[in-house]
Length: 273
Image 1 (cartoon, rainbow, N blue to C red):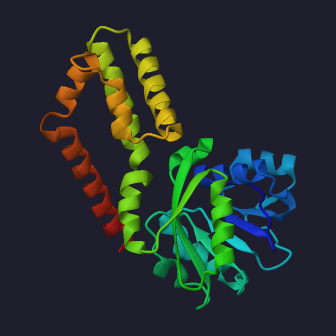
Image 2 (image 1 turned 90 degrees about the vertical axis):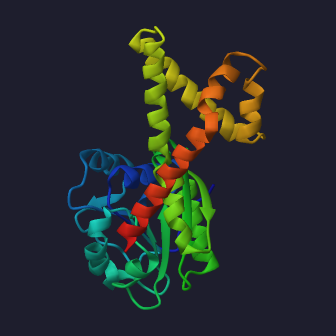
């Protein structure tokens, strides 16, 4: 993957997700001299990285010209204030790529020039290890070239999927944005169940962590769907079958997850409004 820019890249916000994106871009060959990082509370780790790699980082770094892309990676509550501050540097060629959760295309575009190109993206935390998935939606002013640029930038930390309907982003947030927390909780519960079954806590935690991460890697790299992979592990009248009888009884787990995703989607809609 080659990241080529027609102008500077301004990353606004150097928190965990912003830093993950930055490290991904540099690892994929983005010219550090084209990168400018803006954050009034710059993490020391980013300052050290800037010194080592030669990109500009500060409270208000001076750009040599209008940015090709502005990546907004701030807390949602700060988005409007930050957008108002950066609006003067937005040109017709600039695309604003936001990973601020819950911020709609309309709310993002409101402080910006009327015809500004805006892309709303929902990444998830596995992006920090290059295994994320990001779902994007663009406004009507975003060109194919700008969409391609955003996809290239986000691909540095995992898979990228586009949707045409912004209304889907609430469900996206509930499934993939919040989803890692559900998986981590499964790992917690599996470890606790192992202790209840007689395992030492350290061993139970190690087995749960390795099992969940290994199963995830297998699912990602297999040509089979989850149902087939589950069936492949399940011998008739075996130990897995005995466990699945409990997990799948009356579709209890399926209904519980459906309720959890619905609650997260509802909360996403509330935050967006």
